[in-house]
Amino acid sequence: MSENDSQWWRDAVIYQVYPRSYADANGDGVGDIAGIRARLGHLRDLGVDAIWMSPWYPSPMADAGYDVADFRDIDPAFGTLAEAEALVEEAHEAGIRMIVDIVPNHISSEHPWFKAALASPDAPERDYFWFRPGRGEHGDEMPTDWRGEFGGTTWTRTGDGSWYLHLFTPEQPDLNWDHPDVRAEFESILRFWFDRGVDGIRIDSAALLLKDPELPEVLDDNPHPFHDLDGVHEVYRSWRRVADSYGGDRALIGEVWMPEVERFANYLRPDELHAAFNFDFLGCAWDPRLMRECVDRTLDAHAVVGAPTTWVLSNHDVTRHVTRYGREDTTFSFDNNLDGTPVDLELGTRRARAAALLSLSLPGATYIYQGEELGLWENENIPPEQFQDPMWGRRGHSRDGCRVPLPWTGDEAPFGFTTATPWLPQPAEWKDRTAQAQTGDPSSMLELYRSAIALRRTESFADFSWLELGRDVLAFCRGQAFACVVNMSGAPIALPAHQSVLLASGPLDGDRLPPDTAVWLRMTS
Ligand code: NOJ
Image (cartoon, rainbow, N blue to C red):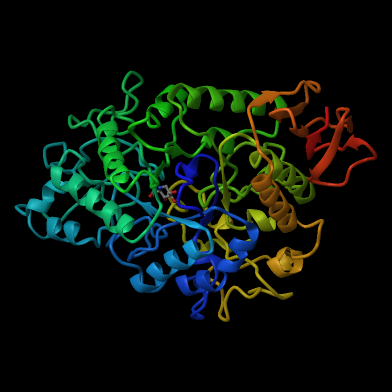
């Protein structure tokens, strides 16, 4: 990490740590900061440029920490603020930047503001939320019929008869972003973390924040009374001013779910966010035409605003892509395959290996969700009574299958993750997917990721252009000297002439590229 590589987020490899499941040092079955510090070497050896840390703040964990009770401290289950500061420092010493997760749309119902708001209808904190009288003669009907982001209703009635809005669970009351105190508080939270040397902020549910104060129903001609309202951009312009006041090397990265690419790109205008997750790519089927369209759409949309593209295959909310790519329907989903859809893990793994080379050589930044580098799949066999995801029970989905603790060492669960029982069970078959088992095995997923990230540092990736190798092949150049070829057809294909193979996602068939396999090539003329 050198002082002058500003704009590092434009082409960084960013690794998402889900602290509950990375490594447990205090033996309670839940991951913690001490565990992350003890296993920071894994990330240094992997070669990542930055860590994005999912929420680690004090929280009742109604939504796995996305219900924050205090943004300026650390949940005791994860450690202390001093440990968090030490981690930032140690990461920096290892050349790794640090991104923390901020959740501005809602806070925990245990946050002091909400407790004060509930305590008295006259409390000034009441205005920090969306308290409204109910409809109907007795006020016992919800103010709107909006459906929640996790399914279910979006209003809960309080003891004094009024209702409050929560787009997620009742334990996550929505903040009123029209209130200047809310805006000032979050700018102060950004400074709190920037002052501690944090290099970036991941912004949860970034397009939600503002609500139409008239609270209209969701109708065909007004589908978004609480999504992507124009005023939200003013919030990010002010956040950008805060970030820029730290010398220009602090990044704001938005979780912006938005099907309309033009509206998505609005968040990335030069005075707003630096980058946003590419959910279009994350959801794209394993299909050469659709993938190519997705890449084009992504490049075009970002070019308009001059923002860097991002490539994301998985995160803590969606089915791991080893599983997704092993199903007949390879598109995005939230659940952990609860309906028992058949999965061909061998096929899924082969495609995930190819996707790793693809996502690490497209122009822009690449995000890796912890465990992707180990080739983990979704644990489909978690007994439902162990589900902790609040989506379960509301939408009939559970995101727990992708949140299972990482396997580090040994032949049996808990695979060095903890000395206790892990908070979610690990599949016994992960004994071949531990970091220890894969280290030094050139055919392993881990070594593929290590080699690819190392090469990415030394290759000079230049301008992107498609290489035409047939309808079912995704192939592109980065300048004159480098090409990536992904065979998405059902049959082996001939590799282009005048090249040498830098890295392959699987064994080649002579000089032919087998199906669902990718290569990086050095073009020689
Ligand atoms: C998006 C987060 O990624 C997800 O895990 C969370 O449940 C929702 N936002 C609500 O905060």
